[in-house]
Length: 334
Ligand SMILES: O=P(O)(O)OC[C@H]1O[C@H](O)[C@H](O)[C@@H](O)[C@@H]1O
Figure (cartoon, rainbow, N blue to C red):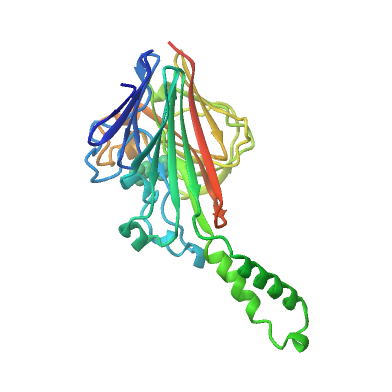
């Protein structure tokens, strides 16, 4: 069976031998086998029982990436109280649909909607779906974010238009302009603000020997490592290598600027749609040894390349949808 369900996972496979495994917990992809080998790293100490986010695979960071925002304005007051990377990675998703089940490709769709527990920390309506598609050389992951808040009724729209016209008139004519800010506030309250990121742990033979290519000279990146604390720098160009602890967010990559991971003779392309920022992370022994669910020397066996929309906040109006996609492609095998 190309789609096999177990109590905790959904496994998809092709007759040619490629496969992937997705946990309901966090909709975390924990395995992608292609070209005869495992392409994702999962720590042997990762909790797989739903007690904490899975250390490895492709956890989904939503609606925030990293620690919660400090100095948040009113619209981010709930985001500011979330835990690191948000709640999508540590809640159970449901398998909604098998989108495609063919010898050349299998695709499954998961969904996450507010539960009472989520509403108690994040009282903003949302509907998330997540489509994982396996083909011979590629694994693609698409997150769809919908703001299901009702769009303004016609009456509301007419009243807003009247407000807009009256606001342009002097108070001596209208008597008051107090209605206008009211309707603007209403609209803003129903906007959905979020960041989104695929925290992809790519398995490698030896992290100290890989080359990360495709990051263009002149990009701004946030460097999270170093005595100065988090600081923005300008990328000098060339290959990024793991010769020390690396934790950086590269901002504003162009549409077709794929990031390429070279691991000896192997080459893997990370293509992005709508995900303008890319985090690169490897803690090395320096920080990795302090991570409770990291296996000994686990940091030698992976590099995180994490496509996301994280520099700014995406703002989704009621009724709107946003889709972010990552496509991992084996460009050259052993
Ligand atoms: O330990 P976690 O919450 O899963 O986060 C793991 C890592 O995620 C990202 O890559 C961040 O840039 C890192 O700063 C963080 O350490």
